[in-house]
Length: 255
Image (cartoon, rainbow, N blue to C red):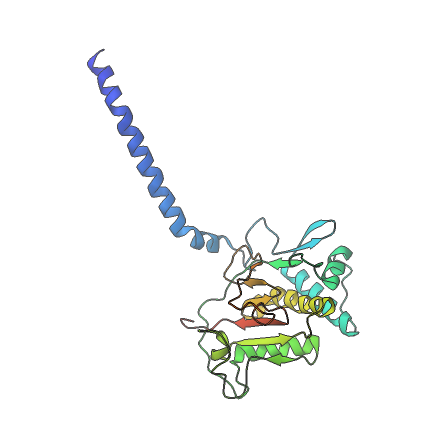
């Protein structure tokens, strides 16, 4: 073997090692920068290019919706459930409206999901006289406008100091519980009508989390998929959020 051939043999493992090191560095950079990369790709409306902002699981398959369409559909379904005149939804697939009105079948997951996009640079807020921050109060007012009077809890004038888990957003006046009792299929259906409406309007109302029926949605998830909620022990109806929808808002500042 010539000297040139021997050098090529020696260089082979070295090139492989350098190649592996380069791949490792690229992978580390990708993992570190991926969230910011996705954030930079978002359109003005907060969605990822090429993907519908919201998705509804119908009996015929998934149907993509814009955020405006999701807001219109969930609002119309909520108003019709109250027997109140609803806005025109002629441009929305009837299968979407039917699924949102019926709610997920027993054992099935949520019907509607929307991509998350948390607002930045929000001011930290203090409690108002209701025991809620102004952002949480805005959510309460918006729900009342669409859903009418509801059975609410998780806040009191002056704020709550006990009765919830450690670090609960209820203690900051940023969370509201909307009760649907007793636990039944009809109340579950009504609870999902509200939960879907909250997710569709999360961006406008600075909503952070929605929890219901062993599932939770987070604005911090760019994919916007509902996830299984791991309830603390003893895992009863309240802790599993079977009898109420929990909604909380972004804290602002460092919260």
